[in-house]
Structure formats: structure tokens, C-alpha cells
Amino acid sequence: MSIVKVNDIDMYYEIHGEGEPLVLIAGLGMDISMWGTAHEIYKKYKVIMFDNRGVGRTDKPEEPYSIELMADDTVGLMNKLGIKRAHIMGVSMGGCIAQTIAIKYPERVNGLMLHVTYPKSPHYDPQVAVMFEQLRAMVKQPGFLDNLGKYPPTVDSFIRQFDAILEFDCLKQLNKIRAPTIIINGKNDVSNPIKNGEELESGIKDSKLILVNGDHLVLGTNPELVVAPVLEFLKEVDAKSVGE
Image (cartoon, rainbow, N blue to C red; front, side):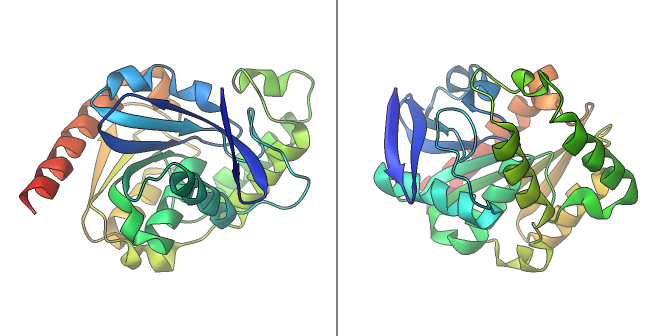
């Protein structure tokens, strides 16, 4: 069990393997258990997994959260671990955090991997807005949060993360991202429509959108659809880095 002071919180993290650093950033309400055996899949890398503020064994301060604040937490953890640059992988809300890191701290990112994520809060889409409101109501039902990992958030900390997503919008800053980027979107993702992936690809210069047969939970239900393109992408980025 590893806990380190980052900014104003005690943050829980794990490191697996050796090699180039690969930072994994989880989605809304999820602790590191969402990654399963990712450290075995990406065994050629030093895999850093952690619980965002508000979930798992990381502190859950009673104050507003923001995507930028959680991006600062991630870079703060990298600083504590002595990691100057890393591949950054984010899922859903974690993808928002990853984008923010690439925009605010471009020198810290080697390759950027954005899974089922969006350049601004998807609640702007009327259909998705209805789903968001349903989720806000469901989170208060007894037992709902028990499905969000081994160490689920509290109702309040979940809503703080949720509200951070609602305020997120970096669409007009995507052109600041300089890292090579892969974007993976599920063809059947209702909560994050394909158009969001297309906006990311259009806004990020050196990026590629890959559509896979799945929904918003494709990383958990059909991980092989995500793993193969990610490994190929990492191989290409690492080869380019060696060439430079």
C-alpha cells in the first residue's frame, strides 16, 4: 500500500513493472480496480495506477473538484515519483484529465491515449443530458455505488467528480496538444457519441480515431479491442522517440 501527499490530499497509488512510464487515469467514480490486470498487459512499461481525489483510498475532500485540479493531482504524483515524462492513458473522465495534462503540461506527455472520452462535457447533447440527470438520481439509491470498484466513492464525492465533468470544456484548446494521440471510441457508445471522438481527432493535430465494436464500457467488456491498437500505438511512439 503506497500513499503520498499530493497537493492537499493523500493519494493512493501502485507501480507495476519496469520500463517507460505509463500513467493510467480512471473514469468517473472508479478506483484502480477498473484496470484489472493492465499491468500484465502492458508489462513492458512501468505502469502507474492511482485513485483520483474522491475515490478509492485517496482522500475525498469536501470542496468542489475540477478536471484541472485532478490533472494537477496527476502531475503532482508524477513529480513525487520523479517521473518527468510518461505515456498518459485516460478513460472517460480520465480522458478529460489526460487532455488537460497534455494542454497544460505538454512537456510531461510522450503518447496520449484517449478512450471513450470527449473534449467538452457531453451533457450539451440533449439525449446525453437526460442520461446524466438519471445518473445523478441513481447515485443516491442504496447500493448503487457498490458496483464502482472495491473502494467506491461516497455519494458526495461522486457528485463532486460528476460536477467537474459538467464544467469541463477544452474544445478550443485542443490545438495546444502536441503529443501523438490515439482516440478510441465505441461505435455503440450512447453516453459518448462518435461525434465527440471526431471532434477530438479534428482538434488534435497528430491524432488518429479508431472506432471499435462496443459501448462506453468496452474497455471492461471487450478489452482486446482496445489493447491491440494501444500496444501498436505505443510501439510506434517509442520507436519514434528512439529515432530522435
